Length: 186
Image (cartoon, rainbow, N blue to C red; front, side):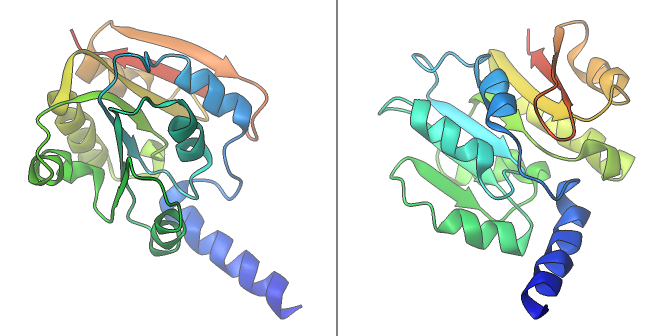
């Protein structure tokens, strides 16, 4: 009984920074990652990777010259990501708002792709807007910001930052089903 209670307690605590208690499905990961040209990507950033459900899919697809940099603020998820031993993975315990300063410390000036699992609808509006703007600014020209959400409520806010360069798709084989936004920086 104690183990089940601790799992539930940890799941509820993680919900506050993840927006869900169930990891993303492989179907969602595959649909999000089909938007990435892994033959040319050198810097991929993942925001809010949680337990690494999508991270593992990215690591299975990247080329030898690509780096994957994950931003995770949740302590439990950060510790879980630290267990992934891969030479091209860098896990940062930092907010997505700090993308510029954190990546410049590592010697990077642009990201080719940003894959986001951030629960934008539960993050305060000022912070979520700042995250979008800062990530847009750090994205390479023609780079893509790929975000999933469980509703269409964030479409207008993404459009405010990325303009009309947004493609929308839907993945029903995820719990809950998810909308995928591919936002391109022109």
